[in-house]
Each structure stands twice: as C-alpha cells, then as structure tokens.
Image (cartoon, rainbow, N blue to C red):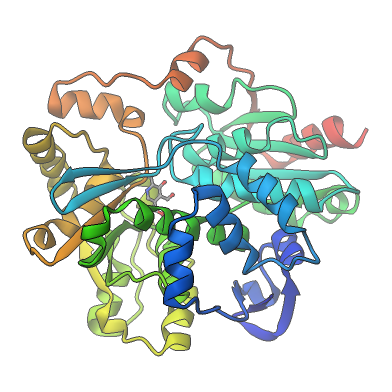
Length: 434
Ligand SMILES: Cc1ncc(COP(=O)(O)O)c(C=O)c1O
C-alpha cells in the first residue's frame, strides 16, 4: 500500500517514508491509496480475534509485508498496545469506550505508542530527535512512548508554570533519553520555537528532527483498531442494532480513524462529531462555508481547535466512498452543558466523566432513548486529569491511578529556558552535536 499527498496526488510514498516525513509537499496530508473493503465474513471472523491479532491484521492492510514482516509487526503492536481497552456498559444501550487506561491516561497513547514502535523499527541508522511542544497531554504520551528507545532522543517544550503540577510530573520525571524544557512563555511561544528549529538549516544539517504530531498517518491508522475492538465488545444481541459512535473532536483525527474503520467494512450506522463551541465543522456542515473563527478557550481544552487539520482527510473519505456529508451529524456543546452533563451523569449512573468525554456523551444523549440503537461515546481522558474541577462540581475526590501516584513522588528533571531561540539552539548543540 502507498499513501498519496492530498495536495499533490503525484507524491506517493510507502508507509516507512510517510512515517518519517509526516507532511508532504505543499503541506499536504498523506492518505491511503486504497481503502480495502473487507466482506462480512472477514469482519465477523476478525471480530472474534483478540485485540492484538485483530490490530495486526488491520494494520497489515496498510503496511506492506516487504516493509515489515507480519510477525515483527505483531510484536511491535503488542508492545504499543500493552494496556486494557474497555467498553463500559453504563445503561442498556449506552456505553463508554474507555480509551484512557494507557500509561498517560488518554487516548493518545494508542497512536503515539504505535508511531514510536514503528520509528524505532524503521530508523536503524541515524539518531532521530523527536521535538514537540505540548500544553500537557501530548508531552506525556510522547515521552512515555519513546522512553528508553536507543536510536531516539526526545525533547519536549512546554510553557513554564502554565500546566498543572500533576501533568508536569507525568512527563518531566522520566530521565533516560527524554529532556523536558519549561519555556518562559506560553504554548504558542513553544510551538514557534519548534517551528524555528525545524527551519534552521545549520541544525538540520547535523540532526534529524521529527515532531510526532497528530497529522502523522501512523498515529491515525493505529486508532482504527479501537473502533473494531469496541464493536467486538458489544454484546452479540446488541450488535444487530444501529450502532452509533459519538466522537469528541478537535483536530478530527479520532473521527477520521472511525470513518476509515467504517469505510473498510465495520458496520457503524452513524457518527456524531461532537465539538465544544469551537464550531467550524458544525457551521460548515450547515452552511457549506468554511470560516474558522478565533479559537475560544473551553473546559474541554484539548479540543479548542478552530481549523481542524484532519478535515481534508474526512472530505477525501466521503468523496471516495460517495457518502453523503449530510449524514454526518455534528453537535456543539457549551461549557455550561458540559458541566451540567458531568453532574447529571454522576447523579444518574454514578459514573464520572471529564469534560472531553462529557462533550461526546452530551452530543449522543438524544439518541439513547431510541430502542433500535446501540450508542457508544468515546472516553478520551481519565477523570483524574481534571480532579480539581471535578471536585468543585461533584464534591467528590477521584482515586488517582497508580501511574500518577508513582510519579508524584519523583523529582522534576526539567530545564528552564527563556523564550528565545538562541538559548534553545545552544541547548540542542550542546546536548546532541558536541
Ligand atoms: C482528551 C481529548 N479528547 C479529545 C480530543 C480530540 O481528538 P482529535 O483532535 O483527534 O479530534 C483530544 C485531542 O487532543 C484530547 O486530548
């Protein structure tokens, strides 16, 4: 299988190449050349496989056996997906796909850990530096995924004193091949510094950088696997109903993966794209005008995106499959509704949601009473990541998962640098060139 550039169709590359370069010419996203169609028998068969075997089967549809043998692919997937994935039935026809039981308690662990395993495998010769800016979650996922990989170094920039202590402890206490730098500025400053490094000719002559960001196709195809796993965990009788997924969306990578799962044959009836008030997609679906506005900060902050960068991939799927874009439902959930949802769901089910998962639940709510549907909302982060806010509204302390308890006791190993390219460049030269 090859992948082509959506902005320049002539640029076609194999998996291991798109893995390394991320974006193609003209800032184009890569997309699989074929979306294989699995027939009903194959779908029924693979739904009976365990998660690792099924994921190996699915990912081998996109990565040539010549690039990586199926045995090695399976071994890598086993290392990447080494944590539980649970479809939690919270009402008769309602369940949460809990994607937050990985090492950094968020759905990102799936995509980033798979990408890390692939880069580790395909990059045998020269050292790669994964350089990324984070406002919290990405840093955690990236540092844990690449920890101790001997041909890879990781440098994460984050805004000094602008992320929670818990978040900081989760990724700044690791050591080994990981360096974390608190920049005296905001998240945008960190992103600008990363961009400047990627554009610096002198540094790029001697070092190979990769951002491991969410547009990388390797992260996206890994996410297809959990839609299949969700389906396999739906009780057999309920699978006959119309299965609906509500996906909390920011950059729309998660939804893209779900749509690819459907495109290759998983019988998903419908998707709901759930967003906070950063509603570019909702307005586009209703008016046909793509007009991003200034991004507004919300409680579901990881979804504060007004120009979702995966949207061209979604359009490509609809075009290729000849699907009607009107069938994609979009729902906009305000912060007031998000908070009310968390309170209501706790009172009704004694189930604790965090803001992103609450947005996806709230968008699905109207469906739940319909008897002929089975409804799944994606739980993308563990509520303990929002413990202060949840304590404020529910007056309930959340039991912290072991991973958080362990790292709270560890020492923060971060460096602190001014918001200035000169110092960052000097830091990289000192640590990685000399
Ligand atoms: C907790 C959480 N939920 C949902 C999303 C949205 O996912 P996507 O950007 O793939 O739409 C993110 C994105 O970072 C996230 O961190």
